[in-house]
Length: 489
Image (cartoon, rainbow, N blue to C red; front, side):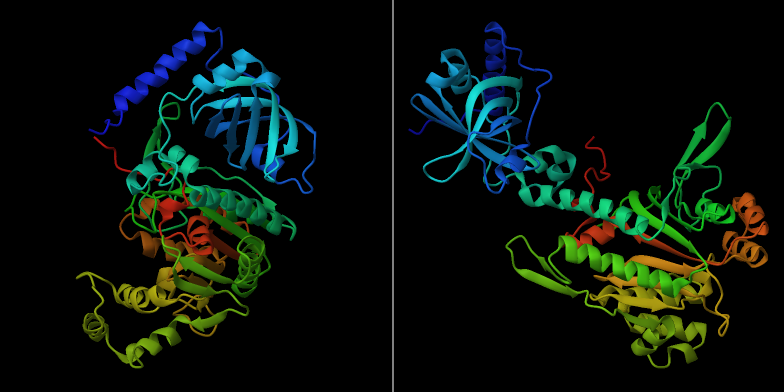
């Protein structure tokens, strides 16, 4: 009869027993400060690799092999891992026995020693002293399979980051890309600013806000749905090239492409227009792809490593008007009456709400039959003015505004406008959008425009969606460290 594997409670008890054994030996199981000279992956990555370099490295024990009076173990963190060689004669009996018997995979230790290369060519550390830093009271996920349950991955991201190199690398790449976006804009004269995350009027987008209340001020407030109206106040104030990497909050649905809390880049450039903003975005995204993705041809792969789609970012990117794109869906689309468009939408298999306005019918057809199937970059220009109330009206066709919507990978990545700076037209547009809820108009924003805002181009980029597109992640939850989830209870 085969022996039964220990239960979870038995495994937890073994770790608790080792915790008490450490205490009995006078070893602090949850240590303090440990001076380090290198991170594990950074040390291993040195080229040429130094011999006999004094090092101090801290990390989590990720593997351990005891061979008589020698122990080999790997320590690592987000930078990578490196092998440590421990000789009983070198470190002494007590530290060796502690490592052999009381240190588990998952514990954190500090190693002081010197670098060397084994006879097998493995870059390693020859340990001189060992310092116990933290006892892991729960065993780590299986090293070969990691966490396979998607919900557990999102609920316990820390375990995912320990066991899944691909997931960890996405977040390292995300951090580098955001830092590079900052550098890219700053190198072009843009200044980074910060605007309020709590606002008394939720403006800058058509979305449902999260509501809160400020007790000291005795007034309701909203978590911002967009920073746009405050950034435009800064244009009025004379800051002519500005950007903000900000957190926005929208009390709406959760899906593969939507999280209620998300990261957005907004930038404004006085005296520019939407075409210049498109050039700026095109250059920036291509720079990110070439720097971090190996080039402008992006291959998205499934879990088995098979290529499922290819995105070609080669410049110049296609630019086409909204009207022309819908003409490609149905050459007669713009000749139909509103009722005919509703009927035609149903024929095309697009679900339409009973109370949809004519422009909403058209937009739904566009989203399903143009946007959703567009993999390579497409700038959709000159959209209906009802869709973008904060953009400047086109001089030749007053039914559209001077904007672009950048579509890649079947979803909108970035809108860009020639910004509306006429306070009279802006008030009329916002009143039309607000309808009966006229009190929701930000009167101070209109007042600011009346002092004079320079003509400007503006952009927004959904950072989460951008990272999805560049890394091949299929869900926004795969690029957000802690996505919003329904409570288990």
